[in-house]
Length: 609
Image (cartoon, rainbow, N blue to C red; front, side):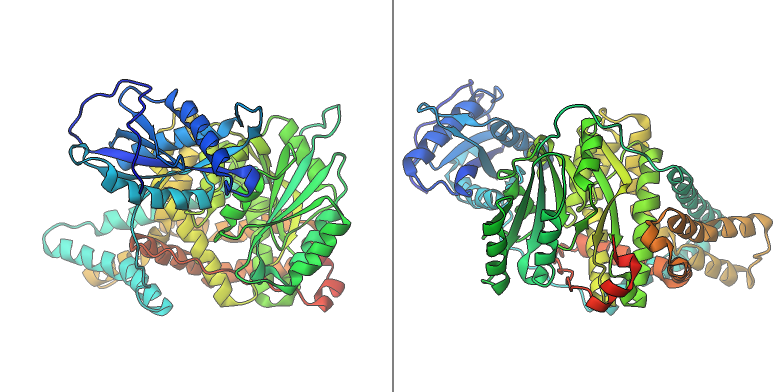
């Protein structure tokens, strides 16, 4: 690092000998694809950012400029890491909220990437500057307005094979409770009967939430009436990892350009690729023929979140739809989404429908499951808890809200993280099962496993960081706080409780030599629990899009497989995901996207809009 100016205080600084946090704010000018190449412009931008930040500092915080005016350095009290990060996120959001106007009258949209580290003020700040700058450079690449603490290089190795991981999770879920009860019994503490009824009660309560979701979904919400006046401009952002999407991306782009919308519609393809691909030339030809398409390569991106964040400064729409690269929205999708956003909502999540369901037994299973998720659970839960969730694709945001919130590439499920932060900030999210987009299901068991493993670990990652904050969030009402507890707390514990009856029954058999399963209460509770899944499958068929409702056998297949193995397979994935997360394993396996066979598209009415 070069030498530094003396600190330029905007507030008095208190003397302290406690540890402090040194933060580096690295400037990224969105007008120049996140790289400020003009040194004089960079200096002027940094000075303007300094003035904006210094006016917002607390009494015990201070700021200085680096000699080469490349970065702004903050020094602030080091409380808990979460508190420091929250304060720095406030500062970065404050900088990004409004464009900077320089002395020459030029206007610039600017972000800052914030990195920080701890230091002892008695030995100076220099030792902390290099690590903080490294973290800030990573934050610039992420473009998510989320301060990064320097962690240093990490080594993460999987703990054994998939089989070993699953075996460990079952050992913890089945053997550990059994031996714990045996040990307590031999120590004179008898908890078998208590554990038995606790297990029954937990499963019954969980089933009650599923029944409630189902009944609430039977009257699907309808969008508000369309307001008078011209339609707002709209943008679609398609986020793609191009090597994975090469077979499908051209058809996807053409489906968006074929959309009819009452206002202007811009289509942004934000993509990253490690090497040039032939499909890029074809995409360039399409963009040359239709100026509504903007091709936005994001060279330093490693995640969907980074691609979306990169696109946000190039979208022109007042609202923006976010899509994966295999999605084909229904005709009139943006007009329908507009009604929700003009009606007072900040986000509306649509209904994702599988379009390659006819390919195999696996894709039929996933097709029916998606109807259960998007036609039953999502709308039912939105009524039950008072908020919906953004599902990562076929979701429409007010552009200003998404620019302020951003997607975080550090999250395995950036959509759930954004949803929880949005609801926690008071934004309104709607679920509309009538707002349809068609996508592709994984075509192998392995790819499905890795997809669900990533979803489960992403949910757990968000739950660990957010559950206590959200259940105490004063912005939320009591019903919403309870919904946060169910989603972020209860649902994460359930994969472990789902197997609890087995070790408890095994313990009772060990203790008594037999188990009485004829209790009317036990039989009724078991029946009530087992029927929840088939009833949801029936509701999913009843509420499915017409093209899938003509396949009732798919839903019978889904109900049967879910009852026998699929529900427990997803629970096992959740348990393994939690163990991976607790060990610090963060690998993200890309879900392959393969174009459906032409014969399926032609032959199966379920694949037509």
